Amino acid sequence: MADGLSEDGVQKRRSSSLSGVRKAAVLLVAVGEDIAKAVLRDLPEADVQRITEELAELRTVTPELSGEVLEEFWEMLETQNFMVHGGLDYASRLLVETFGKERATDLLTLVRRSQEAAQGNLAKLQRTDPQQLGKLLDSEHPQTIALVLAHLDPRRASQVLDNLSEEHKVVSIQRLAEMRQFSPEMAQKVAQSLHRRLENMGDTARRSYSGFKAVADLLNRLPAEGSKKILETIEEGQPELALSIRNLMFTFEDLVTVPAATIREIVSGVDKRQLAMAMRGANEELRAQIFKAMSSRAVEMLKEDMEVLGPVRSREVAQAQQEILNLARRLESEGKVVLKLESGDEMLA
Image (cartoon, rainbow, N blue to C red; front, side, top):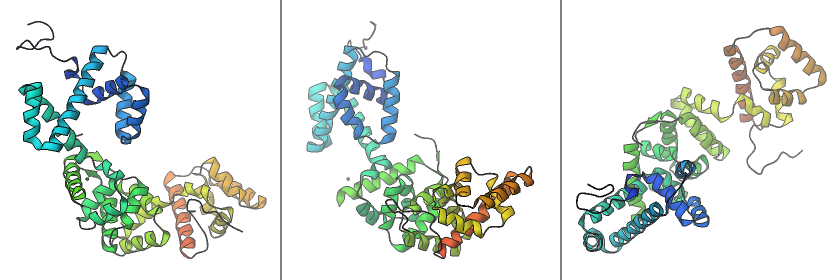
């Protein structure tokens, strides 16, 4: 059998052995830089990264390979149009007449997989209106809501959360915080169901997921009163879970971002040895920020206390920092300090 020929004598396509991502990279090269930029702007970030990696590995693309990929892309577009406007039977009949039975079967399979992948990608919900998505999710199981929130960036997730009922807000946050991993197969089923419902109103390994951090980022973007209410409700039934979330909402290193007046208020209420212990684990930027908010005499005394401590255990440093954070949060809840400024806000004298 001649090289590149099938048993029936039809020449095989060079592109048939390429992965979908490699074909996408070849296609972008073939259509030119301007069109490629426009296409990449409309793709999810994860897809852009994968295609960019493929583009970096491409050395030379022959005119023959470019032509095959362009032709296959056009055929898939035509197949999709046939299916949309005339249904599966109509598309199948036209494709068989145009390309032959074997190629028609291949095209229909490719288009079906493409549609299923598009529907099964929860990240595409990122482009759905948050208000509409929130109302849709409000009738779903909390675990489903948590799964969707896990696939959204914190800003969009907080907008979706704001459109849920009070009951679902709390329980969904709990489920999200406790989430450690999720099944892509289940995610695909959820996404397909949501896409179908939206239209009626549009990796196989298990992946790890940091629920506490996602919840902290999400709640930091909610109005202060809303996040406070959610955390207080969680705290009533699961105090340890609420504490884990609070610990990630504002860390000791975040003190570098607070106003000097806040730092002075916090430092004035902290045991001096505890402050010295906590400062042993602080970076230079935070140390400078804290020293700046203190008098020169107080800074000298603090530095002396830090030196007197000698070698310390990291566990003791972390505990001292946590105690200072607890004080800072207590002062904030009493309205005495401000730990986080909203975007666009500023402190006025």
